[in-house]
Image 1 (cartoon, rainbow, N blue to C red):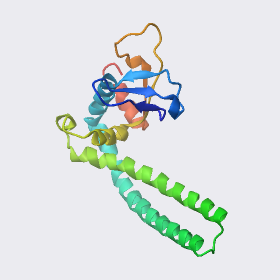
Image 2 (image 1 turned 90 degrees about the vertical axis):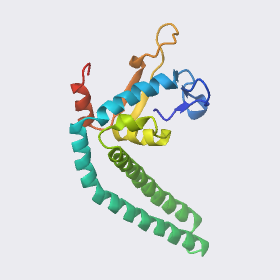
Image 3 (image 1 turned 120 degrees about the horizontal axis):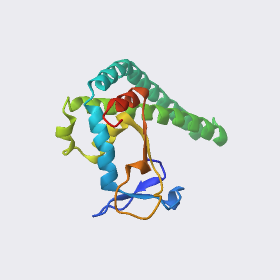
Image 4 (image 1 turned 180 degrees about the vertical axis):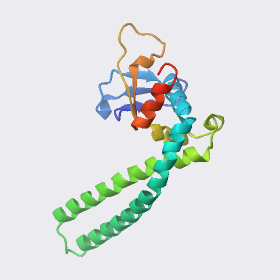
Length: 192
């Protein structure tokens, strides 16, 4: 979802709104259940693709060395942050330099942490084995979201055109897929 599209209050009618308080337009709203069903149906279909699983396994194998590298780099940067904090606390570093260096290091950690989270999705998918659908209903929202992130970079929901209706319109939704393998697999699906 676009970072400005936020889930509304929980209750009977869950939905997503583009909130002005989050920098959005305040005019886009979509009911949660039909949107989630539409998106997750595509994700579950993709999760059963043997070609994608093979590509993901290759990526995960290549990625395991990267994951170890990112974890080590994050640990080194955490050490650097402690060193910076000690230097500032001992008055060896001026505040402006401390803030500047701290922001740079924290940005590196955040970027690697984001990449690590992406790789976590592959392991979640592997845990479910070949039949993702059978375990789907018992999964938590976070587990479903993690698996969704294996396939999806973002989701954009556009304003309704024409008169108001209670029908979900998938034409209002654009899914930005993570890579070309996923897009190619979708093209092979009926109606793709």
